[in-house]
Length: 149
Image 1 (cartoon, rainbow, N blue to C red):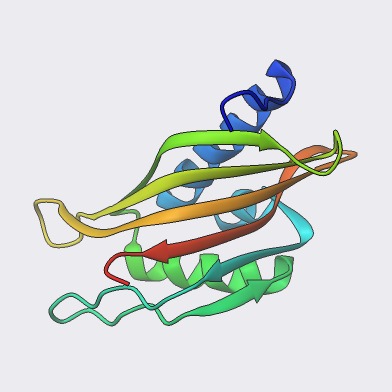
Image 2: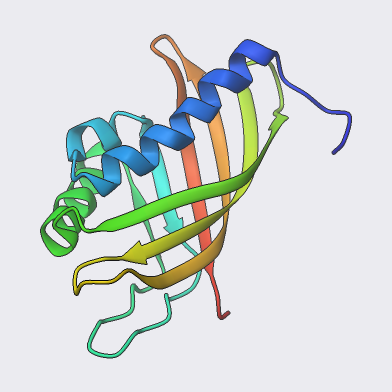
């Protein structure tokens, strides 16, 4: 893991995907968020999120393809109303099976500001697979596992 790298320019572009993922989702920019995924890209929640008092837990499951990802993004935009913040930290990117594929790991934090002062709502591990398309690098899949498991 220490000595496996992708080209610096590719890594820079993938790091931008991670940042835009958070910015677009936090601000309810559903169309922009979905555009970060390959057309058949997926978001996979491996376990339910921890329910907080008065808030439902997110169930495990897989969402695949732009249409289904858009439905999720629109429902979350309505639910969060621009008052949550996702952060991805400690990002490590590695080469994939060829120069058009890569993988990444990161931690994700979610703070919720809907009721005033921010509350830490979720912490987890994120695994991502990337593919280079004609339009550039995109998420092929994101798998999220939150604490507690």
